Image (cartoon, rainbow, N blue to C red; front, side, top):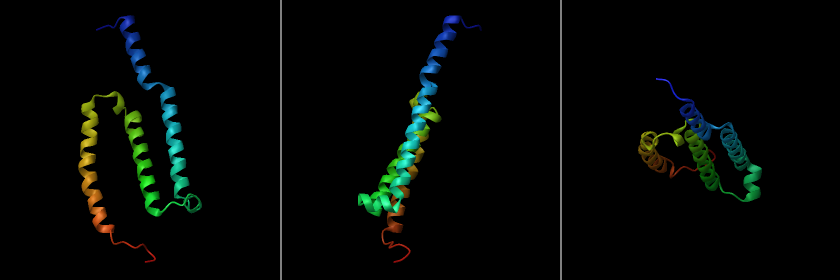
Amino acid sequence: MAHTDHEHQLVHEHHEDHHGQKLYIIVGVILAIITFLEVAVALPEVKSFLGLSDTIVVVLLLLMMLAKGTLVVLYFMHLKFDSRFFALLFAFPLLLLAVPMVLIFMVLFSQHVGIAG
């Protein structure tokens, strides 16, 4: 089945709208900035300068990790442009695993005092 020039142009434009090089560069820059912030927050000098507790640092790192993972899945794995079914198919098992894992870690490490303790 041959496509007309108009159909080919529409498909090509649709593909460019979703997968333009500029979009990937922007997402890549955002990922680099978040990575820089992750490294900075983990540095002892920055932690003490900002007065951040270890708990706050861990929460910030987990949130930044979640943001980076979400950007990678949405844009580089193209889930943002796919059917919502595929996004749910990807996210649902993660949620099923994440909740029990967090609860188990809370129980296991609730009395943890660290290496020096």
